[in-house]
Image (cartoon, rainbow, N blue to C red; front, side):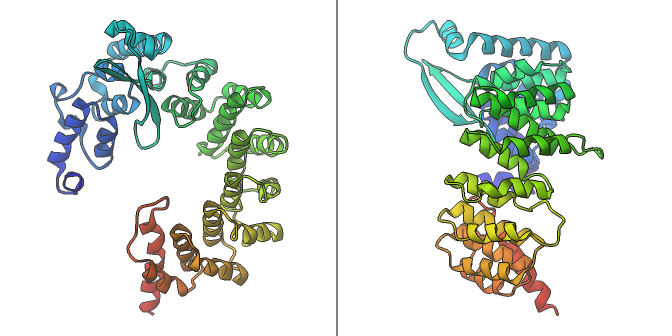
Length: 393
């Protein structure tokens, strides 16, 4: 059924499915259908869920589906203000307390963690026959953005830090909103958090700083220099593993030899996630024709790491880099016999980019693309493009 709905020729069925998904409170399915071409504007208002009910549900994905560009103008500012007040009431009261008020039940609340959309998860609370998700903080942030209301840094941070899990929608909506504002006062507030005693506050600040630079596509790129200075220094003393990892991810997003130099001490870190971030961050945005000797040596060591993700990341970094040193090419080729398929796929991809014909036979051995962390079709296609170019010569 999903294949039929997502087929290019079934736009009418896709639009109907979108309306059904919204009415069934399936925000994730509604978002998928929108991404695959469903047109919310073709649905009459009575075929969709009222925006108030979507806000009540606590699902940011469901609310987002109803606030898409094609139907956003159906909701006047007065209605958006009303549902903003509703989201704020849920947030201030708390999901469990509001559930008990509405159900008048003192039974135990069942709480689970659910995926709300492709990127974010939320908590889901069930009491009797009523189920509500705890994404009201994210919903509030989105509504305020549409209304042009300027939330304070402290309010947005508080909404995020109600949830200790970074993949919660409230956290993601807050950090992205702050980053997109590119406000100097917000930048300073985030930077000041690096000395906060609570690691969760430091993590929030690091993510806001990283995303502010990452999303800055202006010609001035005003945050690049300050971000590099902050993260280079921060990496030398951060004790918390999660915060350190975020800092190192940020360094890997700078096309600067200083960033590589700051990453190098962590190439042999005891934590595999840290080593994986370092392997991914080395030189990937650099325009230099070759890795430095120190970076090349570190990457060659990381290619033999005991952790699969570290080997895969190092392989992708070398493969997609501009350094075509034969020693690096041979090191990638050695991973064609790796015990992990994802590493083998990365090796095929790297060899194809290094114009090494061994990629074609290795891709044939791997067979059709399979689901996994990597989008295998994209990475294996590099081998087929190589074969096509050379067969035509």
